[in-house]
Image (cartoon, rainbow, N blue to C red; front, side, top):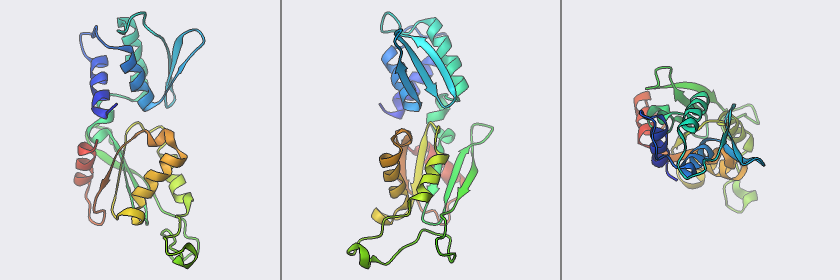
Amino acid sequence: MSSRHHVRVLEQIFEHPIPRNLEWPDVVSLVEHFGSVEQRHDGKYAFRIGTAEAVIGKPHHKDVTVEEIVELRRFLTNAGVTTDTVSGASRTIVLIDHHHARFFAPAGDGAHLVEREHLEPKDPHGFERHLEHRKEAHYKGERVPEPSEFYERVAQHLKGVPAIVLAGDGTGKSSAMAHLHEYLRAKHKDIAEHVIAAVDADLSSIGLGEIEQLARNAG
């Protein structure tokens, strides 16, 4: 399901008065999008998003009861998931090229982004801090596979992030963003599922306002 659909489901959960037509399959899909869902032997469902957990019984009919919606509100609030989580500046955006990865996450006001982390590839030779480009001779004219440690460190910083936007420049095999996206799909499917967009951007002179605009327009 699309991020827009998840936003609509979240709006239903948090709207006042409490809705009477929220369907259970939509709730399960929403939680699976941000975390995990496990059906227990007793028929109840264990919901997990990050460190937040809840056990909720499946309603007898397709619509979720008032009591269950109240419990869902408590669970999602503890997990930090609101309608802003999947829209606007509350998305985490990663700017990545072959020299560094910059992580922009929601500021305290919930309306803007702030740079939270900055990672650089390890330099195998001590000359330059960027990904090594070896000679192509040994790879039949193809670009050498990227060292994975950089992308693994980026992946570790994205664990538990509910909505991710990747941004980078370059095309094809020259794009660190494309390589990161491919790496996540191959090695960290749980994280890749939370990438809502991968967008091309000129990172050489991008400002915070443009980064926030990318986050708002993605997905």
